[in-house]
Image (tube, rainbow, N blue to C red; front, side, top):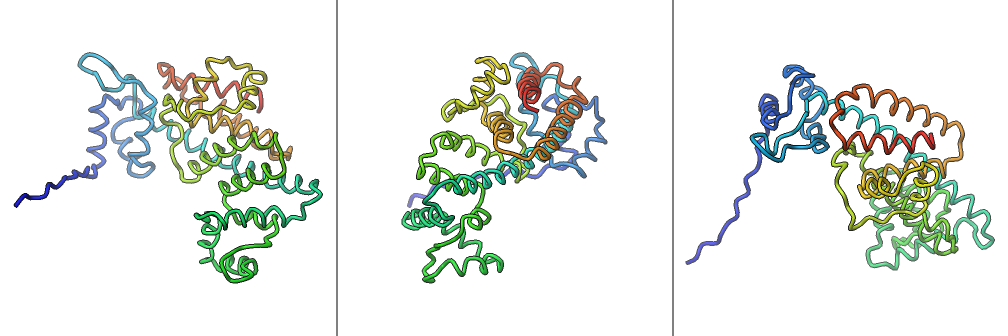
Length: 328
């Protein structure tokens, strides 16, 4: 009888805070700007070790010698500073993305008013039928999952006319308020194709990238990590944004291509671009402008000496500084 081979998975055990500190020290992460006991308190009361140490990927390692594989010029204080900056950036971007979503809905409503055959129901019924006839029925399934909420149940019971879980006759102004941002973009793509809105169709990819950013900031995912990682295989630059960076921000081709090939930098760039394109409230724009300038030209550079030897972070800062100076 031959015994079955069993693969054994060795799980990592949870480190104590003291072990976390020792682990960082073994990687040549120093505690000169911030003492070990202060770092321990910070890890205990302020931040998750695994979130905080993600920022180490923005720093270089030695390639040769006794320190090969260990970090160059990295202090724990730098990780703390980056985590605070990241949190502030996420909060700001979340505000901007929410505004982008809101004003996209307004744009759709304003566009529909100028389409003679539209009554605010036609395009939604067409899209719901399209979704219902699709094997996956993604939108229908998504909406009906929300029916556990009493509020949603009251709203949708009147739109499932035949009680067959086939939705119809939802007015567009109500429809857009109960679908996710990602679902809104899918509907917008269908809408622009149906009415041959060619210029708007060119924004679909931009919006899809902004949805990814929205999901990241909404779930408190670190966004200022792995900023040197390239994804050329899926890199599809928007010619609108490339032209904007070239002509409006006076940015050369080399820096454009390099920075936009990083997915997170590209998503943030698209959000900065689209916010000014779609938001029509001068008051909202002015408030965001004040927040961006305070964050970018005051808080982010508060400890700029930490990054004197970090060419990656300095280049990312210079890239976004051109965009902000030109547009904000």
